[in-house]
Length: 343
Image 1 (tube, rainbow, N blue to C red):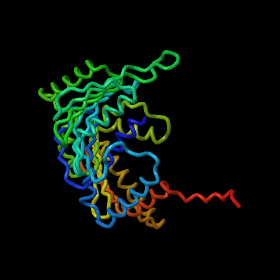
Image 2: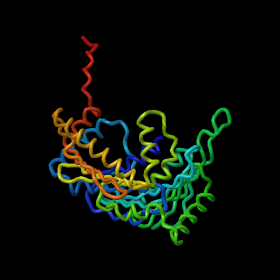
Image 3: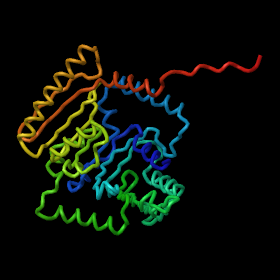
Image 4: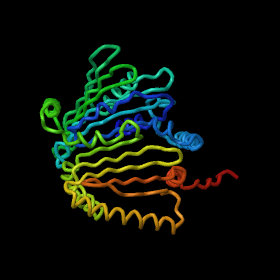
């Protein structure tokens, strides 16, 4: 878990300089594409608001006992991750993508890769280093870990991280799949692109502005509809929606003092899309009315529309109000000082 937490920390660093674009690595044969750019918020957000958030983050980091092993000061990261799900029960997937880092004095992605390799060793992975000094390649491999009863507690997993230069690295990863099987799946995906078969996410990726967003997700709803959802009413509603959809796209980007959220849902039929559009328009109007009555300022605007098989939703969230709201959970209140035992 420490390895996962540290990777998340690396993907959450703040920014000071332009990072290379990685969205060209988006794979239309994937089931889910995730693109992120930590620099977009700094470039597009209101300057004073950005400074306030960075100040609050630094205070939170000082209070935290967990220190990142990566050099994150003044650095930015951009990346694109493609995920293909092999099965949901058991949960198995392969992923690939491209990462780019920038900013920071004397820092490079080669140093990050070396730190990650050491952490992987501590977590039980077998790590092999190849390539050369300028472009090292790290191969991570872990066999299945049985529990006390001999059953599989953790499945086989692994990854390959290839450093391209000081600012970019390519990776592949697998969970629940042997290395040879993962390579066959990658070759199959490549063959699909070269044939006349249209990849499932081709149209959705072409219509989604990933390169200008802080976070973007594009998914093959027909594949994700196979998720074992149904534990509660919310999951059942999501399952019902996924079954009706062909693809979906969500984008988040900063714009002044607002966080803009856009969604484009493509249904399998125009009839279903028309029904859903009417529902969303009604729900948006009702939500906007309720927010006005309650005096809420977090949700600035929300609209729904579209045509044909498409449903488009656009919303604007007040970042200042949202950040203040999140701050309540991070620091709910100071503890009272204990009385001294000395007299």
